[in-house]
Image 1 (cartoon, rainbow, N blue to C red):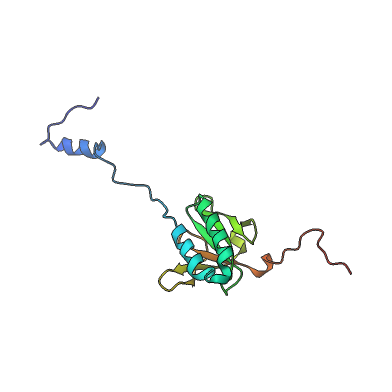
Image 2: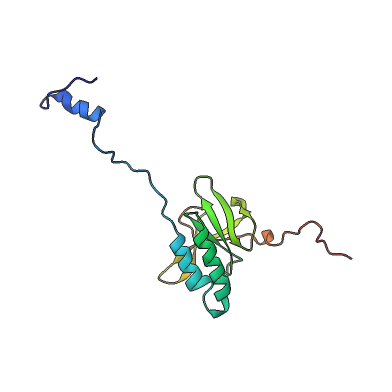
Length: 157
């Protein structure tokens, strides 16, 4: 199909450049899972201690079943009180609840603060970011999303 070129010809190098035959050097980036980080955060920070052992074991079982490669922890507020685990899809930017207490889905407008877990310090620190990414380990939602009143649960006078 293509004419053979003599190796010492200048055209040979052009031929190799236009029609490479070797292995591809570019590799699609893969997003690394943060599941081990989330597991460590739950064990050593969020649900540490005997008093939380039952809840911690339930959460860890749910994490083992979860297929998602990236997860978030939902905190109640800036006090980093554990509420739920969410899966995050970077392609669709969808945040969906896996287990725990909180909304079924979290939209970008609901997010208040973003956090990163430090394994060596065993604590979370606020990330000054505006949007969710795979580098985030936990988040909080605005306070008014915790007080959603359900139909039929209005107080009687």
